[in-house]
Length: 396
Image 1: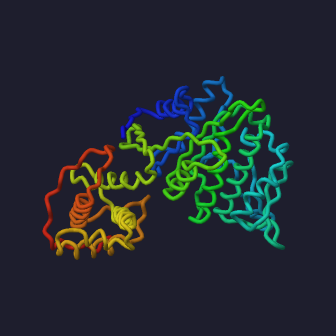
Image 2: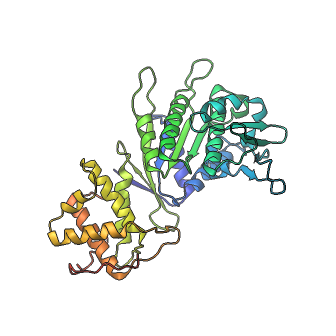
Image 3: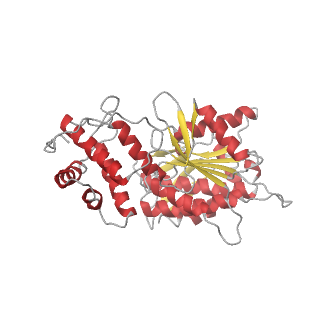
């Protein structure tokens, strides 16, 4: 599988739009998997901006991302502590024609699948109030707020597919990470509902019956959500046309703005192997930096590897190693050092003893299971082996 490199976001957007508009191999949908802090939100905004520049300031993309969520602000009524509501920003074109769309029942149809509260939208003051049972003007959680916003977006997409005049200039949908603060059960439900909507968008026809598909880019860092989307979009459904799509692993190998795309074809879990490549880069004794949370990442990969082979826990991976003395040490290390409450955004560097131990465990694990790592990082220089009696530092 080839890797394509792009010097900046604009060049990457050109590639995505070319994929969606290829006259010989048309693609309805591009699925992107990328880690947090790769630049997915910036990519979605650049995709939108490229469309505006090409259409003399008229946008061709309806998008959902962190900027969309910022169009909704919570007001807690600090004075009276009673009339709490969510305010919509009417200055955004996102809400064009909202008064005329009759969205309430469509929003309720989605919301009933995920939550047990009700809402009322005042289109004069652009306020949304919430109620549950006898309680009025309730404060909902951040997760409930996000799911309400998502349901409103899905309802707008429904009207867009129905041909509402307010959205006729939109030719693309760009959806980035719609499930912040959701648990796994709701994530699966949202993914299934979204996949159903995207299948409809990809097979849309004009009033004369000619194909008029919306072109779609979807990106996520959530592995479960991404996998469900791949499965739901990729499988054939009786009576429905096939959704022609591409799957990519989006990566930023360095901090200098260079991006890479690698096609994952039929392997949505390619990103787990990519995580190993990232760990290998971090473990480089010359150019890498190891933090305590890297033991958590390594344990996660071991768990997925064990599950792939039909085993319940990581002991399968460790017991497969050749050296019995190393097995005992590795088992103790992975179990002890992967259970700390490590802050990824304020990472703690590993101690030198644990660095050596981590490199040995990672190297033996990769060698034993013969992982073919992606070419997203250079092969690290092999570290000198530490003695088997290496201590496990308590600093984690």
